[in-house]
Length: 218
Ligand SMILES: [Zn+2]
Image (tube, rainbow, N blue to C red):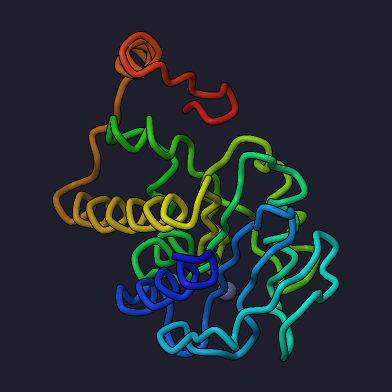
């Protein structure tokens, strides 16, 4: 499967999962030539086709493709320019994660061991006007370490090693958001203790060879 075909597959999937509605959201992937394939603006992610993908360089100049690139291209370029480990970026508005990013931040506590290990700390980026450089500035305090970013009163961004990885981060985040909202109904979460966390980080390193970056620890 080509990168463009993979981008289309993941685009359709995020629409089917209701991580976006109408023409919301945008996706991109880094190519072997260090260019970026990104979705054009104002296209429904459930109907994305080959003609809706535009190739740009790392400063946002169009190399090939028709139409306007996504208005949130700054988010994507910020990540590719700062993070050599990031090869795919998805910006979406999943219902439960966005509800948390717009009300009570239930993501600020460590609750689930596998979320602590696979996603790490989930930062809330201060509200800023969509598609402006204010928005990318709000991500800067967390840019070096985070895999996902909550955008206050807006949505989320996931940054993965591949399109599938970026998609799984998003799916995991949204699944976690649903559980956290249910814990509120049942009286609130029981968060992991510092001792629980230390044991978890030890196991991650000794058993899974997973070295969690300090900036990504709770
Ligand atoms: Zn958005």
